Image 1 (cartoon, rainbow, N blue to C red):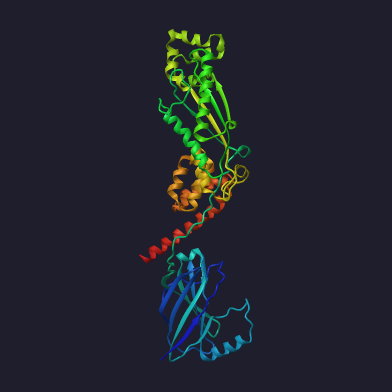
Image 2: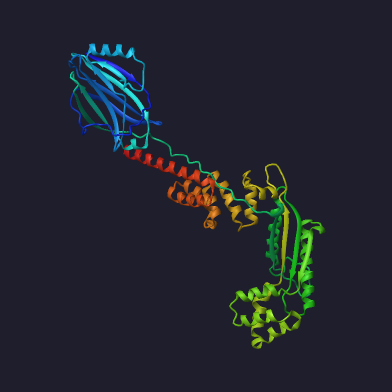
Length: 482
């Protein structure tokens, strides 16, 4: 006949700071055998389940035996609650004594006290848990068997069972990184878009013909900007500046007339096609754009560029400047200017000032300037700004942040790749790497962002640590299953 004893406990023990005194572990042999053993991770705990088969044997009244499961790895160890085994009379005495004592920290209580029969084997079903710690993933289970003799002598045997913690199956840790939104500077709550159009005019005409020369492409660039602004809800154009420029060849009076009439031609075109009132326009003109010509010559590799620059710098417009250029080296440099640089001077520059207005769910220009943008996470706004200002870094970073929040890594990468060297993008680049489970790449960018004072980077570095810990534990689970 076998006597059955069931024990179900759930405790959190204080981990030992000193190593548990035990002899070198050895394969088990002796007074019991394990019918069943399981050591597994359950939630935030490690659960130990044992079925001990105690062999029948006589114990003297003053003898007892303790069996203590110990989980150990290196210098770390934790003892599970011990099992006390005595004779019948000693067991009854212990129970009476325990009833007269109040549980206290200075008393080491057994979690079960078993009266061992001299003629009948005993089964003990033992189950308990302790709080999980990282080192337990590499720990093994030992059992201490301690005999306490009548004279106070103690004999300790430590047995090993090649039993390690079975990791719990788990889904990947869902990281929760924080993106960073970058402020956009806007003066007086106004936005503006600048551009230039190189329009072609028929001889002695100042009316814009969309089908002539390259006009179709140039006008299309203006059309895209105007339609983009007008399409944004609440956007309002507050002013348009138009400046016409002409090149220096010919008389100054003629060039001034061409520059003026072409500037007004653009104004007329915009008013007619977009139904804009005249009071919004401010029209100017520059007869001969020597300033830009000088810059183009300086940036060129023309053979006589230094002589040309000296003439521009030292001779006035009405003091024979163009004539000297025409005489330089038989006129060869001047013909090169006519062919390569003068066409780049004949243009119309425009600037469109506008506000985004106030609307439900939208942002005004003032709020963009005054607060960390993205406060309302207006994707429509940032998409608009990215289209309007393709080289505006802050708009790209903020739109990428919204893409990252919804898991669109491809869209975020397209926005962040061109600005990867801009420090303002470091935190969001780290988020991109983290969402791809590249913790090394993420950590590099988060550390760089934290040096710049980005608060979100500190939180994100903690997410990197947790992700690495999760990857390590999941890797152990995979190896355990294999």
